[in-house]
Length: 563
Image (cartoon, rainbow, N blue to C red; front, side, top):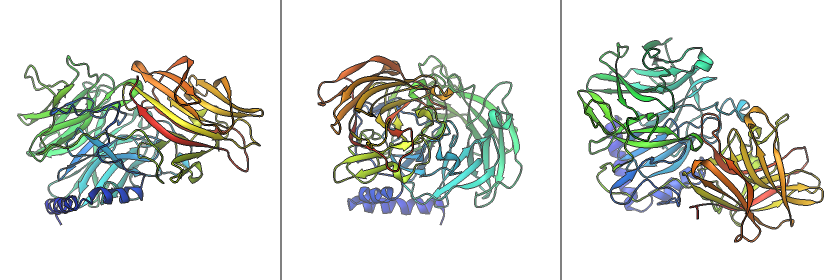
């Protein structure tokens, strides 16, 4: 069956299912079997929505750390995938009908290989910039692990289940792959190199793939050298249009770079170069690395990231046009063929208007699966949590820090999600039941990055205490500095809160009644992690061995606007 026939059949099926009112239920069942609970239909964040409700949108369309985004359209549906590094489940899959309103529908990587290697945090390793394509009835994601090579996963439905990863190209420092299925049926893979592993960077190479796209069949050819004009060129995306081969690639480094496009009539070059977007006079720094996508109405758009330091690499949507077979991305005010980013713009014309929808952040823990916004710092164990749907609680069991771990940065069982806006408030209701035979079990609410801080309940010989913990330079192995705030009654709920303000300023507080909150004196400034932004979430740990763990019951995790 060819692609156009498949899409037509898929569209007809979707229409029938929609008419029957069953599509959301079907997606929900499928997603629950794979990666977690799907978002409710029409969820609207209390802290960020790109859709302004008047036919326009504001950037970023995803004000969260979905770095290195790649996007495709299949029929009238858009799908986005991004880097996930060591976080699991990895390779988040987001869905949209209009490129502005997005929801998470699944993850393509439930456990990261090599499995034992990723059983402990490997900050900044794992999944780098992926590419998603739809070939011969399959959704295909090529993703790089800079220490092991390029992998492929496939699915009939982007919500899952996804196949086990297949190693397409082994090697160190081979990154940012993107496939191209040429007109004659031959498949190719474009990619870049990480200097930290490969000993070379700022070049782009192309390899041939076998007809299944499951392995490279040659040594590859370097087709572009950016050392003189485009240092640190990476993240290539491969397209063909009007007889030209196009490689869209960012250059110049993450916070300050530009969007480059290469084109050639010959797949192996020589390639002409053109800068098609940079910051210009806008406030959007380093706009680059992303994907070209079109609508069913014939409009062209480009999705890319912007580095916002502690907030991560957030996703912007830019209008795109073609001029003399070169793309122009953003607004070209002087007509030189190089655009600059927009902050607000009319929404894409996709033939109809769709409801406002955003990724979910809050979780009431009322089902038997976690919300899809959650990720662990390493491959998880089944003994880390229990979701008690009858009581509507998430039970986190304490797990011992890995041997030699100096701080929480090295603990795998930290359950986190991305910062979801520039300013927001997180409040959790938690009841701690430690093992009475074990000291120093601890559960609480944390902000994680190179340095971290948290507010938590900790067990001691004489009872439970509320403590505030700060760990500066955690990634360098520094130890925690802990301050006791107050003694608490055993097995009584406590409410923990963090208010994140502009600039990543974090203020922790607590309450015993859920109404009156007392602030911790210290103000913590959130920091980046390895190649990503700060994250917020939950943990339950212990330092020593025992034959049974204590546990924390989390009634809810709520994200609200700052007061």
